[in-house]
Amino acid sequence: MNAAPELTVMTLTLNEAGALGEFLGRLKPISDLVPGFELLIVDGGSTDGTVEIAQRAGARLVRQSLPGYGNAYREGLELARGRWILTMDADGSHPPEFFAELWRRRDDWDVVMGSRYLSVKGDSRPRLRRVMSWFLNLVFSTFLGVPLTDISGGFRLYRASAAHGAQSVAPHYDVVADVILRLYGRGFRILEIPYHYELRKAGESKARLLSYSLSYIQTLLKMWWWLRFGPRG
Image (cartoon, rainbow, N blue to C red; front, top):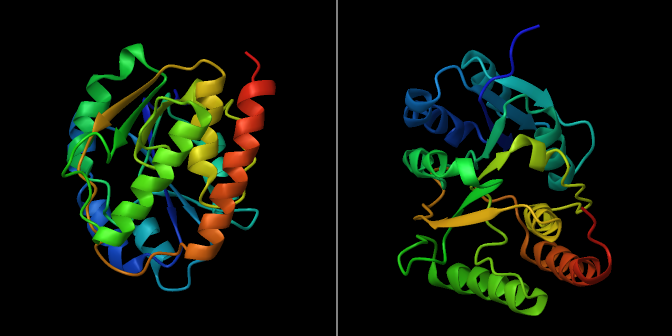
């Protein structure tokens, strides 16, 4: 049996052909530090050439078995073979050049994650989206009493042993908040580092504001209860 790779780079795709080529071409800063890393792409049924681009690049492509972003994210974390798992968006918003800082700080932590809110210039999105996202994270951290600034951010380096035990149940985009809050509640060590969130390179966001907001409200209420009465070691 082949030894487990040191790192899995995991990204989720759904009709990302316009951005995926550039994303794949920017991974050299990661391969320079971790040669032979595993590239895992979990695809949600793309019909625009995304699958073919991923296959030509030599990625390990998995078709998600259950619908929904939350299921794809959980499936990717569980299927990742690396000792560490780097989660990135395929749209180019997470700069691969920042990986070196995450990797450098990993030894004393179970999760090292980028934060858009530890720097005043941490987000290139339009002002309204920046403010809404900042407010969402402020509500989560204040209401739950959790000392994290970017609970909804997806640029993370997980120790695989931590990620595999997250036991998330969130169905939609709120899965990233659900996972990190469950790890926090179980006592895993989490470090945030400021980084600059870039604009999507191509295509359109798959998030829809109404469903996105409702799913986060549900997760906020569930996690309030869980953090007080549910965490176990």
